[in-house]
View 1: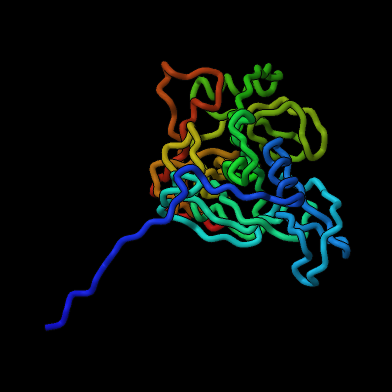
View 2 (view 1 turned 30 degrees about the vertical axis):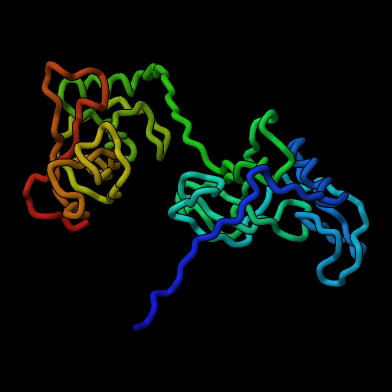
Length: 300
């Protein structure tokens, strides 16, 4: 009968730790790590090796003993993602092993990069060391807990509050909007009707004194579909459109509503949707949006 194979488990360990001497080159590198610095060593050809070696790897010649501080920032040359960290890995969450070329160095060192997912990693990524607290450093490569990407973007909440005092013409227009009507001004020289109401003609410079009450219906001349939220919009995506009110010669910009964004088109006939009278103030917010009237489109 065939015999069962013999299996014996073995473990090699040094419970008290394995002590080895570092030599002057590696020893200097580890000492600098303990003090929160990274150094390389210069070769006879002028290259800076990081981590430092006692001999130039290409020629075998001894290095010069000229130590150069590098980094601390560097550039990721290549990387491999670790989804499931193992015991003894530097991080207990997914991370990347990366070849990092520190600024001022000619070679790259291997270390962990704590990035927010594999998609954040790419060749050329700029990273900086995250050091252990000074009291915890012992002169070892693990004195650098890991490298982390440099900050290249930030979210800054912005809010500005300001008060606008309308001039005579804008105040008159907003009074009309408060009352549910659009007021324009007709230039007696150009015979053009401008909306909102203004006191001088932008084309010929003549004074405008004739008020014209315009209907709240008009035609979409052009529009844009917006995919970013806006507290004034009825939904996302929403449409902001230039609307030429009937009887006016210049369009006004307003929101579109009660219609899917992809159905808005040039030439569409629309009507203003007003806020209830009891909610109106001297503000353009009185016009919630424009909605289709159902009339045939107009050829522009």
